[in-house]
Length: 153
Image 1 (cartoon, helix red, strand yellow):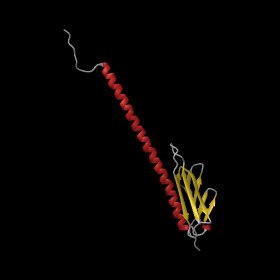
Image 2 (cartoon, helix red, strand yellow; image 1 turned 45 degrees about the horizontal axis):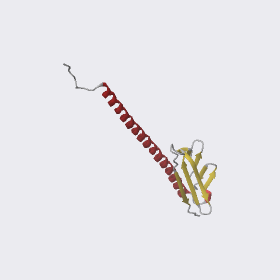
Image 3 (cartoon, one colour; image 1 turned 180 degrees about the vertical axis):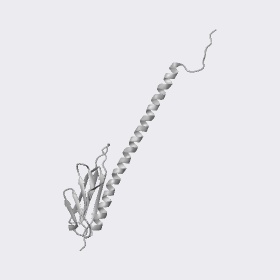
Image 4 (cartoon, one colour; image 1 turned 90 degrees about the vertical axis):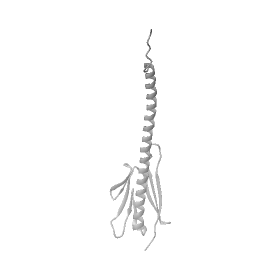
């Protein structure tokens, strides 16, 4: 008479279960990793957009506040200088090597690929263009603003 113990699992059943669980866990870890990478990339994208917008808003605010005549705006190389009559000059400079924009020597934006502010004497406006460096997916943020100058005497 042979007594058979039917309680428990065989070694093959355990190996199959461990293999299936390993595959499922690998898929879950892969999804979580991709989700975290996507979240980090989107945060970087939003930070880049915010940085460019902040520079554009600050530049526009200073132009609207201080530039009344064309002589109060000057371009010198990669620097755009606002020359208020009763205040110190405000200079926005672009460093193409470090990809930064500075205001009066202080870095206010990083990861900037293009920064230009062209004064159009016919329409009395400054065309401000900011572009970020491409991210890992090749996406580039861009801010393009036309600042119209109220010409006064």
